[in-house]
Length: 439
Image (cartoon, rainbow, N blue to C red):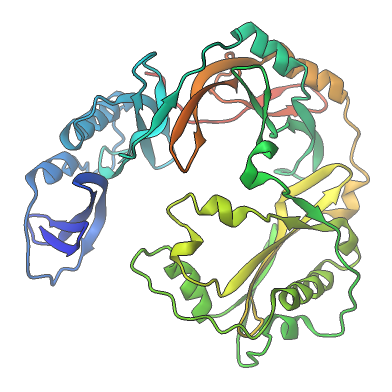
């Protein structure tokens, strides 16, 4: 094994190719990654870690899928090999190319799972071990002296608007449907509804009206900014249009930001944020024309505070040399989040490094067939089926504090997931495809 960092070690296969890496922190393994292809073949120092190689050396070269029960057994073997804690398998998720086994620690009083306290193991469909992440942070569990009954929590939820009007956009022509009110996600043990908007990091998120702008520049001029030699790549298909700066150094920087060994260079601020927004408004006006007034600026003032709680904290990247701006189309009371126009603009040259414009059939929207069932009827369908599940949630990300809460649950869901949509004509309910494997 070769140590390339105080907390990162490479291990090798029997042919002396790098087979993967192990990350450690405070004497505990935090991450294992198995490479699918040989890396660093010219490295001199080699060592075969028998435990890791034996655990990962179950490749099926015919790429034949193995049963989920065998995946489950392999996941347990990996946990028993690399983690001496008494973790329990909380979920096995079937993705297209692999399985994700989620192990959690449990609280001492009720034996209930504590989210993100154990380990995540990724195994390919052919039984090949891909990676594992281990969570060793200290945590505190706060127990309430009293709490409301399950029946009371369900009744509280049924008084809320669980469903709102939406659009089905996966097929043409588009049509109305009903979707969950994502702001409501549970009830605390004292009977208060849990709203996403109550989180400090998510407060003040909303939309701002756009200013009137006059565009005299060509779109190419707006995109390249001061970098007149920049080449712009244009792409278009049935779903979107996009413009991007070709082989741009800042795009490389954005990618490198996800590399923990990346050391950012100082940023040259030739433009203010206000100037970049003005350029973005003009570019939007140019590409969407008269629909400009139906777009609004997505306001996310506390995003940085939220990201600071993750491994990919902007504070670890140094100064940001670009901003990301999103404009969301509003149709009646519906926000088309998945069809937002997005731009990345740099501070040095005011270049629009990336401009993505999803296609919206504007002319069709006012001709949509009205829903056959009312929003009250759609909510009644959800209220008749909704239940709650008592579970732990992490209420303080800084101090790693867990508390009990009742989370929305649909026990009759065939997928184990919540409602995804309700057909506005037939009332048919579609549930989120979770990929959960029963065990």
